[in-house]
Image (tube, rainbow, N blue to C red; front, side, top):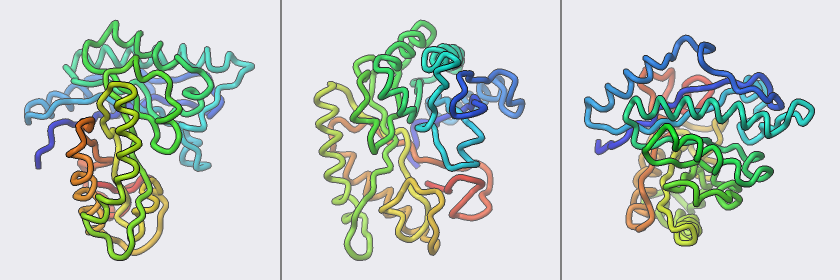
Length: 275
């Protein structure tokens, strides 16, 4: 299928959106460092490189529809300074793991919008701490809709990362050509960013639910409608047609590909089944 990289996503945990403690180590006994190293070794044996992309999970994400963009540490408990100390400890441990698994890239964070906008320079500091443990490429996965333009620390990273769930407007029945055309304004904006920062761009997440009409809301895991597997194929084809000719485009990671059998082609658990 031409796949060159596999993205491995271990999790840390946060009890509440305003907590200052990021917890990992023995909290999740279903996914140990040994498991992650074996996963990386399996990918390597099949000729694929590994990207390590740690996530945070909080019960509020599933319970109230919040997301990582809503994390806002309690000032009375140390606020961002305390949270970033805890988070940096987690990422430094992940950087060591990335070095052990010979990963090609480490993603030091993703979609922490409030930290990005309220603490400029924070992600550069996290990157600096990780570089002491990991010699591969570093990036951050900024959310497409606001964070990618607000992010002030791209110079601290080797490549710009974007979670690219851009809404696409297509008249009539979607085709790969019309989807490619719909990508044009977004790629123009990203090209300007790449030129300004002198960095290439990788889409660290892209995809959409297999639901009719999902082009306008590719991020919406709760989208309802008729199942449309063909739309996913058209979306992938259209994105690649539009992006591959761009000199700054460094690839795309599809969110997400399940290694177990999904309950349906549209959903698997709380997240959409995406190519």
